[in-house]
Amino acid sequence: MSRLGEYTCGLDAAMAVVDGKWKPLILWELQDGPKRFNALHRSLAGISQKMLTQHLKELQRHGVVHRESYHEVPPRVEYSMTPAGRELLDALEPLGNWATKHIDLIVAASTG
Amino acid sequence: MSRLGEYTCGLDAAMAVVDGKWKPLILWELQDGPKRFNALHRSLAGISQKMLTQHLKELQRHGVVHRESYHEVPPRVEYSMTPAGRELLDALEPLGNWATKHIDLIVAASTG
Image 1 (cartoon, one colour):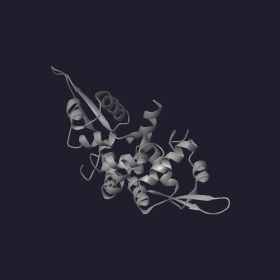
Image 2: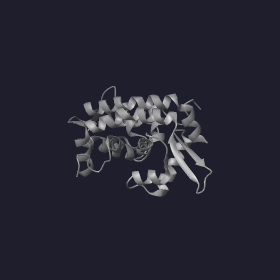
Image 3: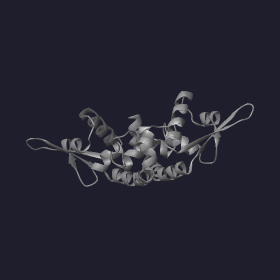
Image 4: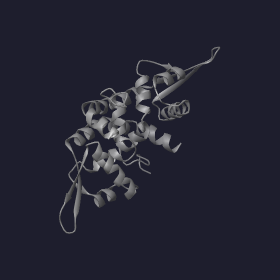
């Protein structure tokens, strides 16, 4: 197997990491520092707890989110971006800018 | 409804356009000029004809791919990138570069 594994190219591999509606938004919500699960859940309107749990696990597996469990009473768990996660959010910025520029077209397509 | 429609932010809207494994790769395959359906299908190993058809329709709806039908015998249909599509592919480049840099982690996560 090549160094790229199952992926055709870097872009293909990138989409495996940020696929779907929520993962870029989860990274966005973590940009200002660690957050607890409930705070993340509140800030992402429309995501189910189950889906947020699953996405956080996948983001951890891909090394872009870190989960820290504090041995306190009651127990405290916080999620944060890793350095690779921060680089990923930076790499997503031009994509967000592109969509902001073309937002009228995208909104028209989704409602039409 | 705000100018963003159903979307939270530009990045959210962008993911609606490039969601999934294939759409960025379809754009990538169109970067050097128009291609016919069969040529696109051959160059994207693993995509079904049905899925390619559906993705091309959605990319057209989002204004990033153009479909041109030539009245010839036999009929010829070509797909090309619009200017907005080319800008989108450019905006995806940092994402591909990010994944290339972190490819070992991504491959390990997908096989582990």
